[in-house]
Image 1 (cartoon, rainbow, N blue to C red):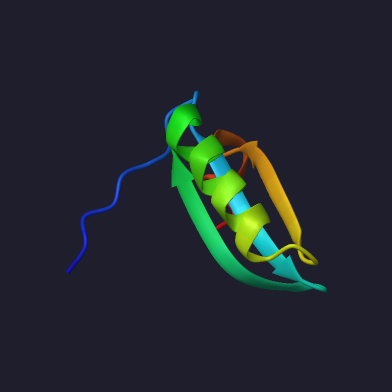
Image 2: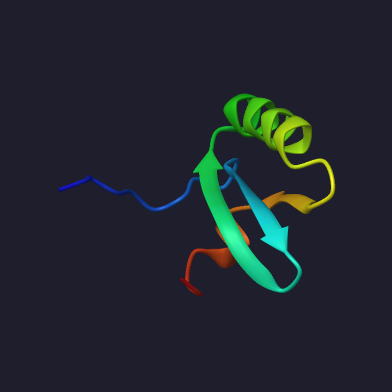
Length: 61
């Protein structure tokens, strides 16, 4: 079992998209999210990677 918490107002949500399909979803503090985003951009060069505020999506998942 994994403990989860609600995103903080400063948290970021990084997602990797294959067309309209979400293939990766990561929420963390801004520094860790930026590092994850950079790694996903290197790994999945041709896919869309988004980095948005996580707080706005907290109620939609």
